[in-house]
Image (cartoon, rainbow, N blue to C red; front, side, top):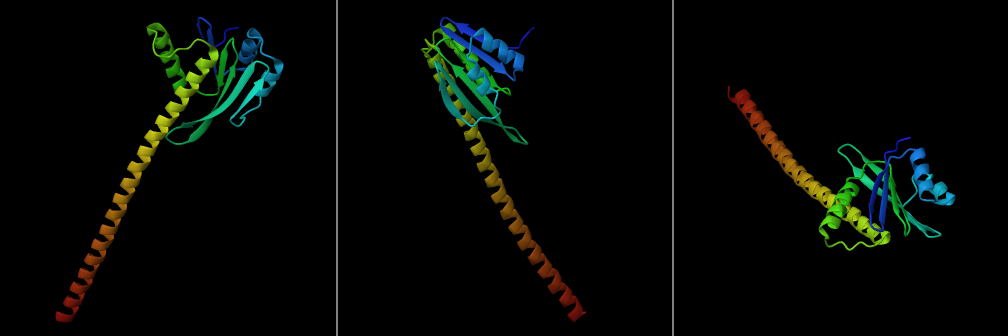
Length: 185
């Protein structure tokens, strides 16, 4: 059976990413990395609120990242399972900052950049930092867009007031002219 599982390995680092996985893919990874059944059972629960668990030598992190699209807003749950041997990330939908982080990580390792990652827990911290910075940037852009819309609404309201005023002036002029015509003609 062929699975769509992204694996990233470098020295002691192992990161396995499962996007919209089927139960068979999850089972395969859990067997390959000997993850206890209690953890398997916990992550099967749909849409757990954001929290952190620790079971034996494993840290399980549940995060909900909003996906803001043009017409709707949805949550995308990200589950991370971390121990000294690996990090597993499981999510329902595509998370572009995750892909960007993979690219940055590969570039950092090739160029021996500023990220000093020598274990999976440090890798996880960098991953979280990147995800939250991306979310912060996204929120900043949305906030700027909201400000622009507010400005446009204020301008539109001013135009509406101006048109109302011009309408009443024009209406008054028409009434006065009509009265003038009726009275003097």
